[in-house]
Image 1 (cartoon, rainbow, N blue to C red):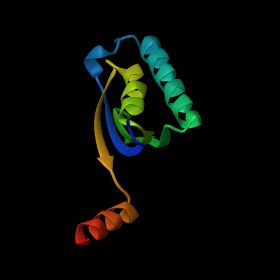
Image 2: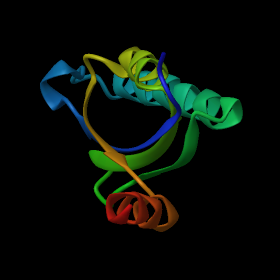
Image 3: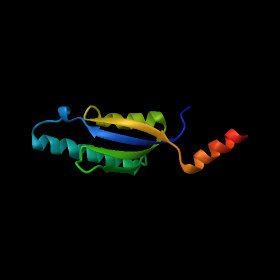
Length: 101
């Protein structure tokens, strides 16, 4: 059984996978942004942004490992992702309390 988790996703465009044609690149970018918007609307993406330069960025995702991994597959092979699970300050405090008994 998978549990709900929070993940920091650092994404990076795979430039060699992109077309040299500006129209094709724009179409791919538009399709990617539609996927991001769908993720925001569904609630799996809590926050999303691009770093200046627009070739890298981040997202805060919430869901099971399977849900997040499956969602990110729609952007492959055009983007690579580094997925980092994280906990909130309250969750960390609860972990420390549990360690203390």
